[in-house]
Length: 527
Image 1 (cartoon, one colour):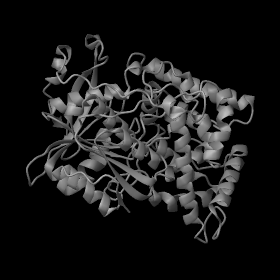
Image 2 (cartoon, rainbow, N blue to C red):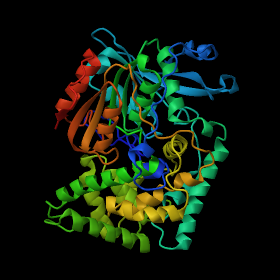
Image 3 (cartoon, rainbow, N blue to C red):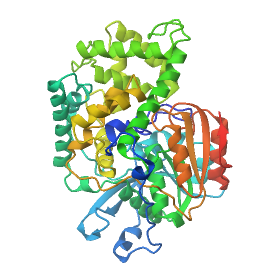
Image 4 (cartoon, rainbow, N blue to C red):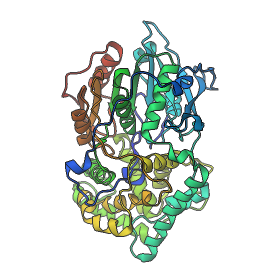
């Protein structure tokens, strides 16, 4: 699934638009015979907690002593630790994991380490720590905790999966994801196949071992290496799935966990995709209502309602499908329907980006696609030189391993189109076709939908935002219902995730939990 972050009040750098929630449709996958499976079909048995004692075959990993060194970023230290490539065969080789930390600044008694993960999957936790969490989290939290991040296996600095070069990714991201005929359908399938083959050729062994379960087990090694008896953790979006998985595997070692912008692990990928599609429609409606209050609204001017604004946006997409427009890009890229759609989606993660989106849409109507292309590039983490971070590669690698493919063929997508278009008249068609990507993955999925209960874990704070586009609020309710010790904290507002986004109520509640271990009353609501 896609889970990403955009700018936040505490943030000092724009990091990881794919970090909190990349599109599920573009990254996650799962299959069911119908679009809306029954609850019994979607929800597998709860994962079994691992034994409290560490197996002898893993002791050498748990007893590592990291050698901390300067990162080149003032105030931060970096280290590398090893984890087994295959936990079922620890002697088969290692994966090297990149760590970074910023030590507690004081005053006050040190509370241990606080691991952070920005989501994705595929977002660099190390980059997030250095650009934001380690300098932008509340001062009182940074005073008491060593702020720590580990890039999950296959991500960024931890043996990153690579699939396509820059020009290859430019071609991939520009591929039409709303095919109108057999030729365009074949081109989309060919693009998915080429992407998957590139990933398989780059990391044939690692690609089988980048699951969320394995990343959660890696975090337990990191916890031990840091000298902490329990894991304290803040995870956003996909990071909530990673944190919940850890709690399910190691409930007795679960400390203070904040799961912000929660995912529902009990859903198949097709259902995840469908519900996220509806989430983006909800976010677009909020944007369109705001736009319609403005004289310069590019989707129809003042007084335009959300339904008409959506039709006007779809008309713009159709024009771009027929005739891409110039962008002034040094590599000659034009703004296609696919890139424009991603540009709009990127702005849905944070209402602070709405003005930029209005300006980009206004320019696009004047035959200038630079603004929407820049938004799309930020989503894909494409740099000015035409290179891409490994975000999209790792995202697909993890999601295609965690759940079976959402669709197995173009025919299955076509059959599901009415449900997706009902969920979102604006984005439904594209989201459905983007969910086809894992059908061609070179590695079979090892995970399945499952409830996570984590019986015996300390109180866990699950945070949901009512109009979150990427992780719909219902997912937070579902995860809080599954976790036996969960306390649901609700943010009534827009945008993706809640902590550090301007709500003093949310921030003070989470700070009290992290600093004093005082969880909120279940069901607390903040605006």
